[in-house]
Image 1 (cartoon, one colour):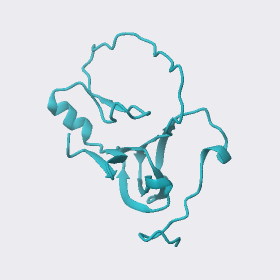
Image 2: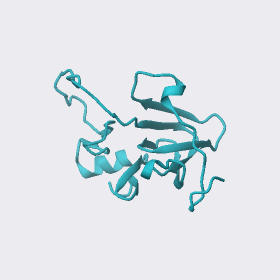
Image 3: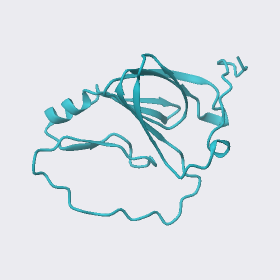
Length: 156
């Protein structure tokens, strides 16, 4: 699974996890029925499944968290069709404006984002499913636009 699940890291922090479309084939070949690609400490848990007909997950409900403070907002994107270039921004020292990496994800790929980011859609009619924590608090309470800097920290 190491070839189909990519972690983008900086200074020991996971910024993004890309799950390539071929991960499900690799999961099937491994003989495993499921794999969580996100680490246990992520606020957004993402797993992939490859299960046979008749397999059962025991019916259950999830217990609400009693209290969340400084809860990190993570996002998940699944590319139905097309491709997207994603710019990854530095989460260190409250300087979210330094672009540290970029990755292109294609049809069937997905990504969990744990950092600042920007998108460029590379094909017409690119179709994407996006998931993030709610409730939605309004743009003014949800986002701060990035002012891109160079490696010296000077705004471009």
